[in-house]
Length: 383
Image (cartoon, rainbow, N blue to C red; front, side, top):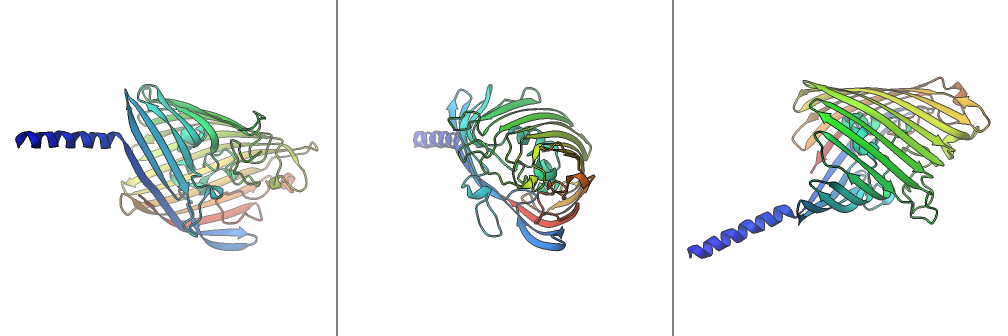
């Protein structure tokens, strides 16, 4: 009898270990709120909006122990709109992420599928929009994709292990075309953390994004509000730093975006462009008053240069201010209020390009002038 009990106990312990080593997790997040946007075609607009502070989503992720410090991993993540129940990311079933790969405790992780680029992985967490604030605080048109407006299809991605606080990685996304350079992408990034200090840098190159539905970036609009445009080439690089002092965290991020031979409706009607450049300078701060309550603020100054094919040039500048307060009702549910104001200056030469208008990509409707204010009250639940 005692032997039988002992055998059952051992088998039970083995079953528990096996379960711990091989697991599948269901997770998700639901973010819903009421938005107010002024100067929307000369009127004020009130609208329900899903996924502004964080994109509403559900997903599955899992691991299988292969032995020797190796694991097989996968993740499938779908975005959705709470307002109407529709799938996000242009109707793609797992539009946020979909990948499979292997992970080594000593070498790093190699994954294959639809994935984030290195700007999103390494640099965006130092911005307000990529950390605590969400889309309302993203840079004009999300021109640098730090708000994760698009992903990379057909991507092979490497992520290193942590070397004393230093991590790095990169991705290459195939065009899946006989024209190898048509709609492909390359991305690199690195981050170093030492106590209260974090430093990061990243780079992204897109060749002919949105050219063909099978390519690396294939779900863009035409206005630039999704973080990219139709262009022969889009290059983004940037660096940032954050430092925590007691309950306060201060951050600074710089990014540069260069679009060659852009086309599409944002460039408008009057003077087609040969190139458009953006320089984004962001400062942000967050103060954790209690474990359940924080307040964050940010300011971004963006310079842009619109070089027309005709030889004319315009250099509008963007000033963006944002403020947010968040309170946790529990470990998984919080309520928040946030507001953002965008002002475009020096835009007289940009009339007819589309860049003369205030450009908050999270606004319920585009501004019809050089300024716009937006506010939101929301609730967010994680599971």
